Image (tube, rainbow, N blue to C red; front, top):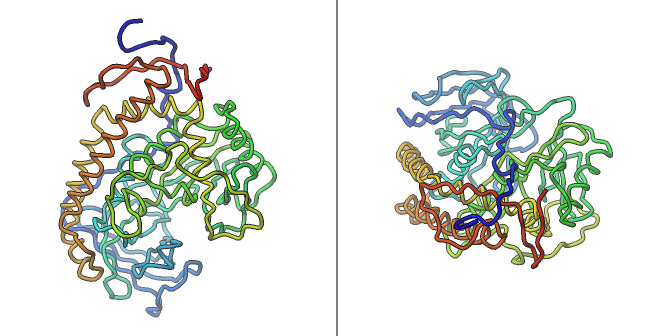
Amino acid sequence: MQGWFRYGLVLMLLASGLSAQTVKADWELPFAGDVPRMEIVTEGSVPVTSRTDYVAAHLTLNGSNTFDSFDDSVLIRGRGNTSWRAYPKKSYRLKFYHKQQLFGDVSNRHYVLIANYVDPTLTVNAVALKAARLVGSAYAGHAAPVELYLNGEYLGSYLLTEKIRVGSGSVEIDKESGVLLELDINYDEPQRFISSHYYLPVMVHYPETIDETIPSHWEAFEKAVQTDSDIKSLVDIAALVRYLFIYDLFCNNEVGHPKSVYCSYEGADGRITFGPVWDFDWSCGYLGERYFDLPFLEPFQQGQWFSVTPVTGYQGGVSAYNGYPFFDNLMHHPQVLPAYAYFCYNTLSQGLLDNLLAYIDDYAAFLVPSKEHDAALWPKDSEGQQIANLKEWLTARVESLLVQSHETLVATGIIEPAPMLSSDTCLPITGNIYIRNGKKILIR
């Protein structure tokens, strides 16, 4: 065949969307009025000092045309790991007695308040969640800023979003057969295990008790990843590429530990769905001192990271960085990389960047008074140009990923070498030959 296409076979997987249950109805921040004001008063004005013990309180929300205003009883406790231990501005978890509809029509009792302490723009987590919703990543949460007062004391500008859990407004899977897992080196859930192929810390958030089927199901998936075996029956690849795309777009290296990596499935033999995306504090070039550094620190660049480190007697808190070899192998699996390159190239060629830049402008403009209020309490260096720096960094990242994904499509034999498409053109890839280590592999 002349021109763009070398092969005429159809990759049905690449065009397939997520099932309806994995994509929540979107809710858009109206960017009107003022940033909502949230006032929480604990019983007896006791301080909130624990990540495990809730404190009874009363919450009043002045919605300011963003939310409906209301007041209700609530339970509050601290949340986070590094952010709770190391940063003076703390994050919190909220559990209402009655369901609230804060983001559209979905009722939920469980929300979190993210401090965004290290982010000078106070926007990165919100933008990452927006990107996840735009591309249909599974169970992607929503975001809105609030001005937080606790027992009459102003604590700063916070990001309000849904708590990750099994239930409406979050991971909506069957409660009888559903399983919610998290890969995280903190390893602090009572139900947990260390996997035997990549030595990953796997925590079981749901159900409350586990049997041998849960570790064995995950182990089968890991083994297939490690050996380049068929994974189509083990993982939802359409959901996986959307999940990997968001982490790749924002260069979120939390997967390397790993930390805050969520996935779920239904039934003993159900396909694993990766999502929702979570925790983008250490992304966009953040290296512990400042954001938006270059060159890009790639989370999935094959051969860049460490080999698998055997782990025994693990108690949590120390990273072996086994997430890097696992996700490197997963990204470069012969059934994943072509699907990923296709999705990445098409998505970035169809205006995602323009949508995100417009969202950043609107969100940042809406946030200005709250951000200034926050900066008086939590001053940050070089704040003035940080929104511009975020937009420049993200633009450069998109350009880099366009080149990388185009090169992958050429290298895998899906397309012949040709000029890259313009930003308003969709490439209808229809090949299913993948070349790895010089060997052609047919994707069935």
